[in-house]
Amino acid sequence: MVWELGVFIITLLYLGTLWVAYVHPESLLWPGAIFLLILFVATKIISKKFFHFILPTLLFFGTVLLLPLIDSPAQVKTFLALSVGVFYLAILGAYRLGKYEKDLTAKAMSNLAAFSALFAWFAAGYGWYLNYEFPAWIIMTVFAIVTFLVSYALVIINQLHLDRFQRILYSIFLAYLMAGVIWVQDFWPFGYLTTGVIALIIYYSGWEVIRSHFLGKLNVRRIVFSIVFLVGAVAILLLSTKWYPVI
Image 1: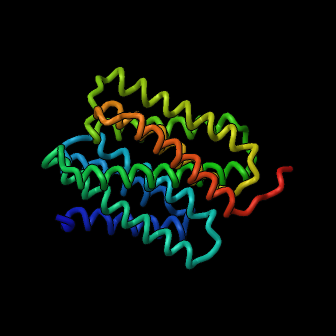
Image 2 (image 1 turned 90 degrees about the vertical axis):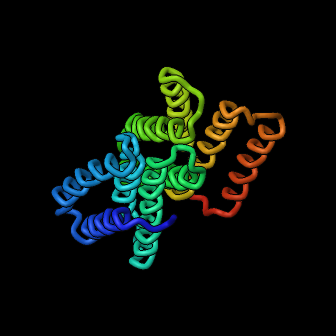
Image 3 (image 1 turned 45 degrees about the vertical axis):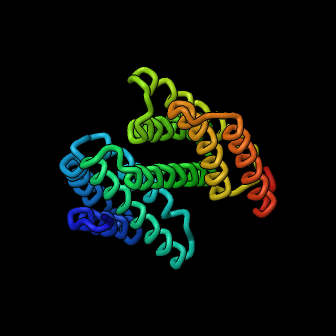
């Protein structure tokens, strides 16, 4: 099932709030607060669990932060359309998981929302960092917190066989990894979008190894594939993107 009226209505509210953020960002406070309150209540009702509120909320804030960095109106509209589509799948996935926790399609929807939220935060965070030149520890902290929240949600959604301590431990590990990644990328001559994509590739590779291990699917072949994917994807991206001088 890919259609649910309640999910569609929440998505319309999401679109309206994002449009306010784009057209009148100075007026976003109250519409944003009301939307998040509705989202919090709605996700609890449709999924029966509060933690499903995490991914769509992070996607919302990541999108709002990324919007001012996009110059072309056409690109903004395309980005908004993509964000709205991912948000719909995130809420639909939460709805379906509330009915059946082992729904693989619903898990895939939530995973897509998680990785999309991470990309938005990685790209937006680094873009704001480049524009306003605040201390590096701030962007590292932001990356770590967002990564921790997304990782914790992913562990639960994908039903990895971990107790609460292990969930926190591995989420902290991934958070620490991404904080270190952004510190290293601070010395790279690339823009915020390239940096966001590379950070997401590194996160996905680390997450895939952890996920495979706790699902009992980790073997030498999968490890080699993850390494080849990481190196190959980053190499292709670096060879095809524009390099900026480091000042």
